[in-house]
Image (cartoon, rainbow, N blue to C red; front, side, top):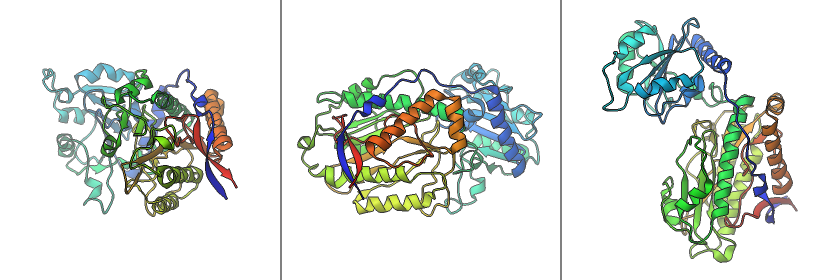
Amino acid sequence: MRRTTIVKAEPFSLAVEASSFPTFTLGEFDARVRALRNRMRADGIDHAVVYADREHFVNMFFLTGYDPRFEEALLIVNADENRNPTLVVGNEGYDYSFVSPLALNRALYQNFSLQGQPRHRLVPLGTILRETGVEAGAKVGVIGFKYFEPGHIKDCAHMIDIPAYILRHVEELTGLPAVNYTAVMTEGVAGLRMTLDAKQIAVFEYAANQSSNRLIRMLRSLRSGITEIGISAAAGADGLPLSVHPNINVGGEHLSIGLRSPDYTVFERGMPVTLSVALRGSLVCRSGLGALDESDYRSGYEGALESFITPFFETVAAWIESIRIGACAGDIFADIRARLAGANIASALNPGHSIAEDEWTNSVFFENSPHRLASGMYIQSDIIGSRGQGAPLTGIFEDGYVLADGKLRAALAQGYPETWERIQRRRAFMTGVVGMKLSPDVLPMSNTCGVYHPFMMDGSRIFALREE
C-alpha cells in the first residue's frame, strides 16, 4: 500500500542544457523512402503522393527533411526504385528545398506560391504529375494528414484530406479514384513514423530537454504582478521551431478557454495557471494552482488540494507506472477512465497519445483498443483533467516517454551517451525521489517527468509516493 505525500526536493536540478542535437543523413532518408516503397509494393500502390503545408508537414519532413515554410508542396514517390522522388514546390520553397540531402527531381508549380506572387513560369500541375509517371490505370495512394476509419465516414478508403484541385488532377490522369494512404505513415503502431530508432530518440530528447527547461524557467518566474507575456518571456527562445503555439494562461476565465495565446493579463497569487512549451518533437505542460500553500487559495478553490490536485497526480502517476512494452492500450484506457471517474474528474480526450514533430500524431489509447505498446513508441502523458463543480480548475501533468527494449536502449547508450545520461538521471529522480515504479522500458524524455507541484509557486515541494 502506498500513500501520496508532499516532499521537499530539488527537481529543478535536472534542468541541464544539451550541447547539440544530431541531424539525419542522406542514407537515413534513403532508408525511409525505401521502407515506404516496400510498403507500396506490398499494397499494390504505384505512386504515393505526399501532401504538405505549413501545418501538415511531418510526413513529408520525415521522408525528405523538407517542411514547407509558406506554401503547399507535393512529394511523388514511385514504387520503382530507379526513379527519384519528385518534390513539387512554390516560388519560396524552391531554394529551401535543397535542405533535403535526397536526390530529388524538383518541379516549380507556381500555384503553390503565395497569392499575388509571380506566375509567369507556371506549368500545369497535370504536366508535372505526368512527368513523374502518374498515368492512366496507375494506382495512387495519397498521404495527407488524416486517414479515416469505417463507421466514421462513408467510403473511408477514398476520403482524402488534401485540396480538391490537386486530387482532381491526379484522378483525371489515372482515371481511377485515389486511395487514402496516410495510415502507412501514422497508423497506431505499424505506421512508418510510429516507432523511433536511437537517433530519432536523441533528436526528440533534445527538444524535450529544451522545452522542459523553458517550462522550469516559467515556473521560477511566477510572482504576483507578472503578466502572461512576462511569464512567456521568462521561458527564453532559441529560434527552434514550435509544434504548438505557447499556451500561458492565468485565471479561471483564460483556463476555461484553453488554447489561447498569452496577453497582458496579470497573475496574482492563488490564481489557476497553465504553462506549456512545445518545441518540435516535444510538449511539456503543467496546470494547477499558482500558490505557495493552501492559504493562498482563492474563493472557490478551498479543498482543491485533496479533492482534485492530489487524485489527479495519482492518476497520472498510475499511467506512467502502467506503460511498458506489451501493455494493452485498451486496458490502460479503462483503468485511467475509472480512476478519473472515481475522483469526479472529467476528461474528454484520450489518456495519452503518440507524439513526433507533430504534437499529436495518433493515439492507441481508446476504449477497447487492441493495440499493444511497442518498443520505439514515443507517447505523451496527456491526461487533461477538469473538475465538474466549483471555480474553473484544470489538471495537466504532461511529458513524453519512449518505450525501448534492451537492444534499443543499448543502441541509444552507445550512440548518444549524453542523451542516455540525462535519461538515467531522470529515471533515478522519478524512482528514488518521487517513488514511482518504472518499467525498465520507460525512457523519460524531459526534465520535468514525474514532477508535479502541489503549489506551482513553490518549486521545492513536489508530490511523492511512499510505502506505508
